[in-house]
Amino acid sequence: MSESARPLVSIEHLSKSFRQGEVRVEALRDVSLTLAAGDFVAVMGASGSGKSTLLHLLAGLTRPDTGRVTIDGEAISHLPEPELTRFRRRRIGLVFQAFNLVPTLSAEENILLPLLADGCPALDPATLDRLLERLDLTARRQHRPDALSGGEQQRVAIARALITDPALILADEPTGSLDSVSGQKLCRLLRELNEEQGRTIVVVTHEPAVAAWARRVVVLRDGGILTEFTAGEFSDAHTLATAYQDAVEASATREVRV
Ligand code: ADP
Ligand code: MG
Image (cartoon, rainbow, N blue to C red; front, side, top):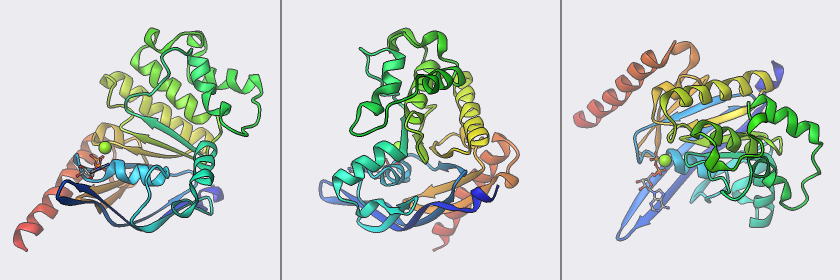
């Protein structure tokens, strides 16, 4: 467990705004957060609160206006583009709501895709077999995405995210296109990957039923961190939903008073 004390991700005073026509939208305002190796963090918040922006900054898909993101000792927000791309390919596994699989490739080929990128070491076939087995995809390995269920497609996306053995898995609304049963199965899988393999995972979601699987829940509001709950403070999705609602309402009341 001493491993879990090592900070893996540090986010320092991160701000990001976007132009929308004449208006500047502050998507993130001075956000600071530290993740330990082995953390499983859910980022909650209403639509537009800055969740995806935070995830994109963590993945180095967007540059911050100010502040810094450091992952495994590397200040990614300041890396030149080629190094950043290489870092992302090797060290970060990305999972999106829309699966983003290549329709003409089999499940197996989709999973292996990140290894085709520059300089990745050849894979021991047994590693792929183990991964397919672990994600319950062995019987589906030759199928193309359109022959797979939503849950299976998202498991392929997770396998693709894991194939480079990344330091960090980032998932943006990974259950957003799934029915609730498949969604809960996927959450259980993420939790198991965290517990069994010590994977560090950040999941963005607006659903308490998803966030409740995490060990920490960070709540964003209007681009800032409103509050954070740790697993001891909520026992299930229902208590988390209540705590979340209370925090959001309390901040709204404060604003009215001001
Ligand atoms: P969430 O994922 O919580 O719904 P986002 O991070 O996507 O929120 O967006 C936060 C705010 O930033 C929103 O007001 C959104 O409209 C704005 N925003 C995000 N990305 C862009 C962009 N590329 N261009 C313009 N505005 C953006
Ligand atoms: Mg979003």
